[in-house]
Image (cartoon, rainbow, N blue to C red; front, side, top):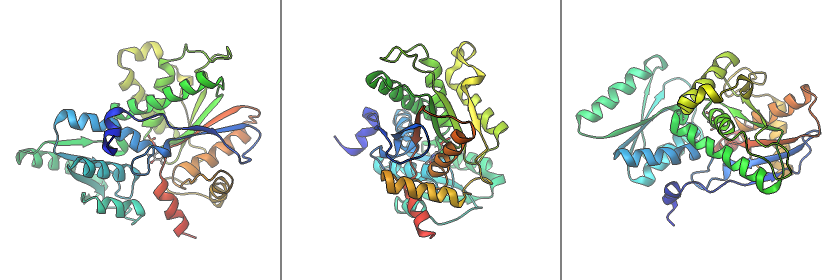
Length: 326
Ligand SMILES: *Cc1c(COP(=O)(O)O)cnc(C)c1O
């Protein structure tokens, strides 16, 4: 099988393993979305696989997206476009132009990076799409972070893999934690749960009962939560009214630590401990920050003796950026 055909056949289920380190009085499992075998994996690779299908179906010849050129999303999309032999055009905010490993990768993939002030993003996107069309080209635009129904659908698959694991092993998770950014991952996990709630675990315990907890890495609670809810509504369509429950959606901003990219020394210590005890790299913008947030959440809510699943959403190149900072 060719590497890029990975996207045609659908992503193989990623491993779920029990963790070895001591992270508190619970049983900790981790789902390795970072091990999706394309461009360092992660949830952006999972989403990209869905967009791959859409790009092919549309017969597009330019893949466009929005995001910081140091983002995991832009790395994956630029890599996928290069692998497909298509041009890639990224609209990037002028602000926050840190050069990270992702930035260098995006440049190596030959993507065109167009910067503009944050306030002019949507006009710039519209203008560029129009310009390509005028030239007789076929652009396909992917929202920042792989937001939108294909991205949500990708993460519904993540939930289905978790449910299948529960069924096969008899292990039922009480909680699922993950880093929540644009909210697409959470929308997918929650939609997946709402769609499969009647399933049962092997041991007779009701499955699909996990509390899914999105740890916000940037957004404040009210807005962050509303974006997730909207994505769920958009994805479920007519089924939304019947299936949606407010209590299925937990989004906490208690561990934002001042916002996007910010983290504390305790986060760094947690990242070092996970690497040392489990050999799993985590970054400080998303995964390590959320894993640390999860530890705090469990402690603050006095949760003990439960089966906890943490979804590792990727971002491996950012792990090396953190190492460079010492
Ligand atoms: C984008 C990203 C997230 C957040 O996912 P959303 O679907 O945007 O909420 C989490 N972890 C990593 C490593 C990411 O790159």
